Length: 269
View (cartoon, rainbow, N blue to C red):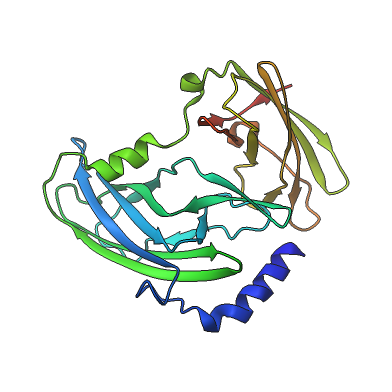
């Protein structure tokens, strides 16, 4: 119901906000590709830069119940064998009792590009289908192009800073265990993640990603007791098929006021 209401609202405002990338006075976001540098193994480190107008935000890979998940299409590129995205730690937004996860201001999204033919230029075409929100949410599309042909091997400051802003690993954050208990519900599975780690600061928010297509995850309720953080939510599948979950695919992100933590997989409780 929430997604339907937001989509209807967005469609009602599309005419007021052009969807092609362009002048900052006409659109709430502008984009460009930062060409970055080439690593010794031939991988290119570049970035997508999104400049959001004041008061506007866009969404993280898991945007929350009221957000619009970003989609990327690289199929128009040449000499591109693979793409990996590094997501800087996002912000938590609260509006009208709903929680969304995303970014405001100037977003640098690092990307690792593997060429099909090493040593040859990469013609990168990135088609972005994203949501941008202020008082309203608007679906927004843009296509960014760049030819990555230089031989620069020195990391650039903006991209290096964005790479450093990604969540801490389990080792860096002092995670000693991550366990998940699964309980069947009418619509799917209740999941309770019990995490042993020091506080990330303030009122921590925990996002659980099933890691498998066709599964939807609710917001979690989170409680900390000393060095233990417990988050509970519900996973649901599409249609009437039972929810089947591989624990090793589960990804848990803890967002705190001091830092964020990225946890891959969880053991049985």
